[in-house]
Image 1 (tube, one colour):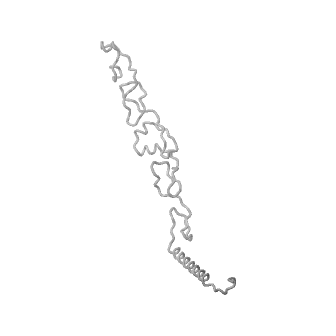
Image 2 (cartoon, rainbow, N blue to C red):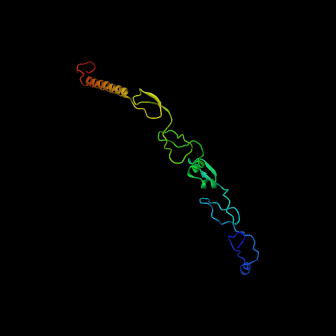
Image 3 (cartoon, rainbow, N blue to C red):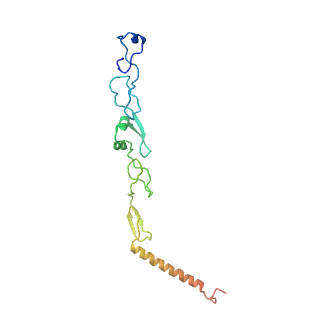
Amino acid sequence: PLTCTNHRCGRECHLVAPGNKCEECELGCSKPRPPGCPHPCPRPCHSAPCPPCSQTVRQRCHCKISGLYIPCMSVFTADDETKTKLTSCNNQCPKELSCGHRCRLLCHPGDCGAQCVHKVKLRCPCRRIKKVRQTQLQCDDTCKEQQRKVTQVRLTWTHLDSFRLIYTPLDSPGLT
């Protein structure tokens, strides 16, 4: 075997007569890398364990805007929480919430799902109540009573206008 202890010398003279001094192994390291690491070991063939990977991996952040350069071994040996932090650009999420406002969380994986925290000036449907809130504003009982009265007055006027148009006397001025 060669000094690397991984390979045997392939020269014919060494196959016939053991004991001839062989040269160093000139092959590259062929040991498997840790799971997930796509980079080969940079050392020539050796018997000792391989050093940790020193390469960086270019990876898109969660919001897909920034390209991040992360040490390979950090990505493939980290737990899920650490991976989430490593692959965040730490900028505000660019995604739009269902209400139309932009998500206020920092770059994160998956759907935003968060409730909107933007405070806006809102009015109830009849426009009587005005508040600064985060959600939709509903009419209260006073608004509903006022709406009922307005509707009643409108119906009365509509009925009276119809009555005047229908029952206009024939001898009234302007109809001749």
